[in-house]
Length: 231
Image 1: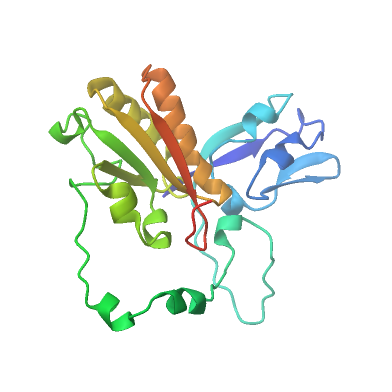
Image 2 (image 1 turned 180 degrees about the vertical axis):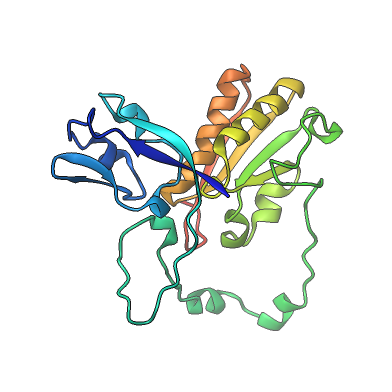
């Protein structure tokens, strides 16, 4: 499986460190006066560092994805890397105390508010009838699991498109969204993303698609924290 990663031309690199500052995944470090990709698995392939380089020393390439390394109990794990991959747990006791009758809540069958299928950006036809004059919700995958009221607050009354900017091809997202926006007179766009830096890719894809398709509609962007709260 091919994955997009950066490639640094060390001959052009002047060691300014601008690329390292721009990388949210901590994938780049300045070593011996040169920028180096310290671990290919850290690179999300979004290319946020490219425009920061004054020497044009960085490019995106496609490379075979390395197999997942088996980690033994004896190996010490580093705390660095992508913030979105850091483990965290949450104390939900306070949430439980706010609910007066747990049994009553458990017995309530909350209906789905999903208005169409499919929902994956890659699978949706840009000519689907339900896209005409639609209010679009473009959501990062993880938001559905992090935000409890996503159906009633965001999916209801909208056409839902989902994707993962960390694992999928953001350029492909942009091209599909350009097709959707160019062929359908959409009424509004709401982008729902997680707070982790790698989730910014879905925002960039939507904004670039709006610019290239010359789409001017009401736009809203909502950020969900990893604890399930709106930021």
